[in-house]
Length: 146
Image (cartoon, rainbow, N blue to C red; front, side, top):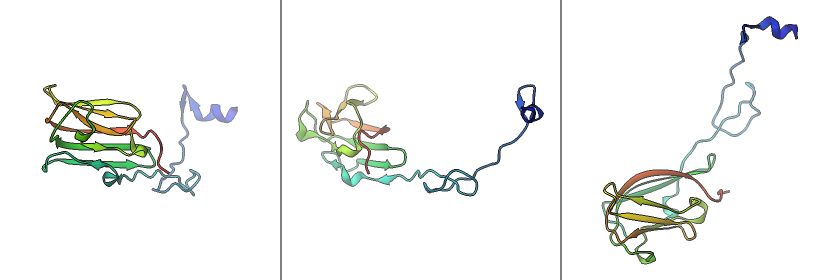
């Protein structure tokens, strides 16, 4: 107990902790001799998503981080057609391993055009809309990819 009192004054700890460096692997035990790092590589998984019914000047990118268990979807698209719950008009299908947990909707800034996401089948479907949509969103995957 006297050692602790000797290095502490007025509730401030005067001793310093040795810095531990980190690498980009998941090996090691966290000591300075064997650092433990975190892999933050994002893998492009766009080809796993069925993208369709969008204009030629549109773009969609899906990237996945296995270490974080996150998917990021960046998009700028114009839906070619829209219909309430009509799967023929879906703009993309997100595979089960990359799906968000729950239903969501995206809207244009004027609030006149909407797309709905359905977690049971991974469909993103315009709701009676041929509007322009642009955004980026990140979510935890509903089932981690091994």
